[in-house]
Length: 423
Image (cartoon, rainbow, N blue to C red):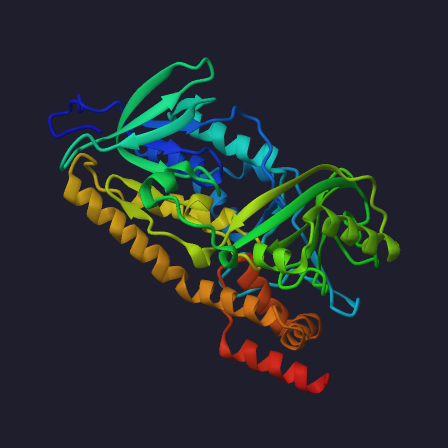
């Protein structure tokens, strides 16, 4: 941090230490470096590295990429044009990606192997220090009203070092060690946790045209009874490759004694029985999904949580990238000019948390209410039926699941109407 005398603080190594170089962490590091801050970007992995995900990049994330000039990762990739939905009874509907006044609805599919490396490299090129291959071990405050946090690290050779930073940003994923250090080792809360299982396979049925001849690329969602209140998905990556997967809350897996890998295989079998050509599955991987309903306190003394580390995942859709990137951008914008000023920094972090929660409160409540409906057969049938048969409901749910929309009264009434008509 540059002080009023033009010099540098002598008691810190960096202004900001970002732990975790996924989308949230890399956007935070990129934005902070562009502000002229000294940034260390720490990750135990080296890049490129894979991450279990559906690979869907929704409107919120696309908007941030464009705003920050990082959208080259979308070059050569086709925008999703059609959304196919398989309902509870197997009926299929297809709808074009909607146009929503005042909002982008652009959706792309980019493998996380490429997406995360692109953002990581952008952060390093912007001036962040590359500390990939370095494991975060823990951190401490050296004393009352400390102006730094001491961060203990170990590199790939086993050497340890202490890094001093004015601010630590925890963006180290669903199993965040930074979160455990800040809020304690919480007991697992299955109600607020999900599991996703993803694989890749060969299929050209979702590229230029969907299986029923609709304009493409097409992304498909199956809301079958085996997977509610979540779903199965097929997202076309391009070049004849699809990302195919399933998700389910942990509590539902336990109640049904279900195996995610088996659920994925069954989903693939159902699609093949419908005539969809899908090759052998490869790179099958599971991943924990901490939902927003279990979001912890974000702002702490000289530390803050964002992304999956902060449970910023919509369990209905599995979306988390846009929330993490949005939080990262807003966090850096909210920081004071002098990070060494403890009061100013604390106020900025509290303001960031308040504003993020406030801006997303109704959206998250809408998603939570929708998940509650999808847990039960009759309301689930009404919701999915309305999505398939009422374009206005489809548009509203699309915006809620892939954007930041809310389940408003009009959409709810149209769902009820659809249920009554189809009784």
